[in-house]
Image 1 (cartoon, one colour):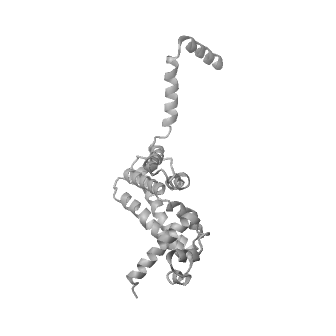
Image 2: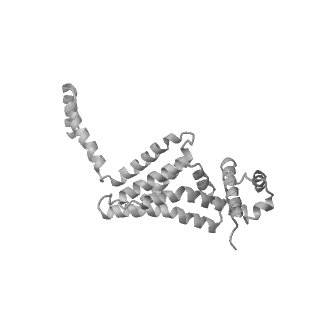
Image 3: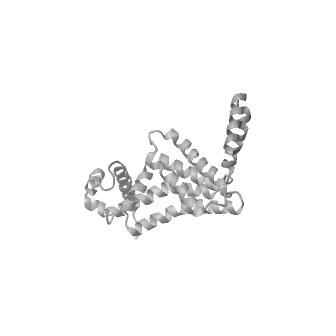
Length: 231
């Protein structure tokens, strides 16, 4: 039997209020009796729609991921070029984590889910991992990415780096979200696409050109010192 529109609306309202309470109080410190009181329902009224509190948490996860992650997946999927696809996903993912306070809730409270529900949530997160790993692998095939990087480990590193934003970013400064997302993306892409040994060669090169610019006395002293070390 189809769910009636007013029941759908009630479920959405329960999820919305539950999410707010979970954000403020945490999952463990939010009794169903408080949720029922906020909604003007009885506990029996809540359990009419949800078999358990854990079922409610699962639906909160699903709703938040549909709202936050789906647009990120869609934006990345529109990019045919692997580097643009990678940049788009990492930037939008990091930006979402900075702007949406529910991200911390999803990361922190996922361990409260049943094994079955947790697997369902992990399948959604897996989509993001696949986007990153597959883009890196494609770039390596095209010779546009470091060949000495393991694509699977790099994908975990990129997503993990962005995920930590939820722990330290100040949501009271949303104007910084784009700068944070760009910084994270540039650091990851820059390291991934950089040529192996480029940094070491650049350091040696800068050291070589620094000596002629020394004052005459210092240059002479430096030359004497090098001669002594070679002796």
